[in-house]
Image 1 (cartoon, rainbow, N blue to C red):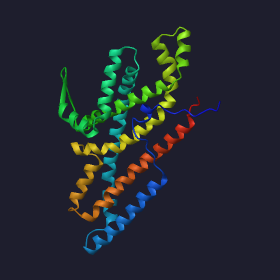
Image 2 (cartoon, helix red, strand yellow):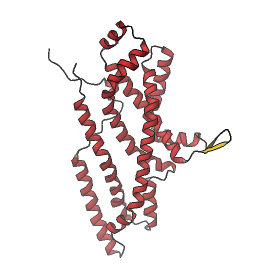
Image 3 (cartoon, helix red, strand yellow):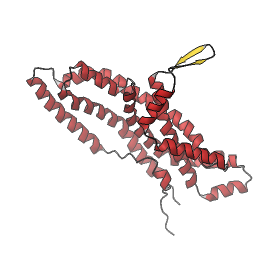
Image 4 (cartoon, rainbow, N blue to C red):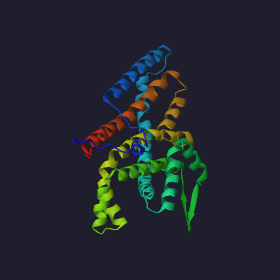
Length: 276
């Protein structure tokens, strides 16, 4: 019998669309940015305004600080969502029907809820500060955005965990049970360690998608790169010829950050392909 490469279960594969970036995407983006900048440069010079390239260079340090803020939001959201999603994913495969059904309900709700709606929900539901004993802990908007983005991440990580566990051959469970391992020992000592390499590629794909989704935080008042871009536009007097080069420049940053993650994801998928 010929061996066939391991394929993730449908529910596991369909939790999020795979991020497939190639070098051509970056080349096309760069070419479009240069062409739009040249056209804007000519339009600005004709109107006696500063050049587009000089304007972008002047505002780039400020925009970079906002972009780093986007990366920090994605990092913390992914960390919180991964921890919570790991426990939620274990609940999805629990033998206790009440825990399994409750975990399924949470997973389906947050996995299918619009990310922007969740952001608004968290923004309005969480207070501006919380009091713990005699201490007052502020909750700025960016922390609320972290929690808001962590909710869909949690649900998708839970689905990744569930799919990875379901992809383990049943013989592994039976062998562990025959050796006298408890259900908990089977899961944490035998099954989950084998799932790590299967979960890593979709987990990285999820992080890349999350990073590009952090721009949603600007809509709810977080001072990220998109918010700063709007401030730059206002400071430049609403120059319409600046819009395409400015936002294209930011788009290129996100591509440069996400492209290595996408390529590494593909490499890990090939490396950890499981034969059954």
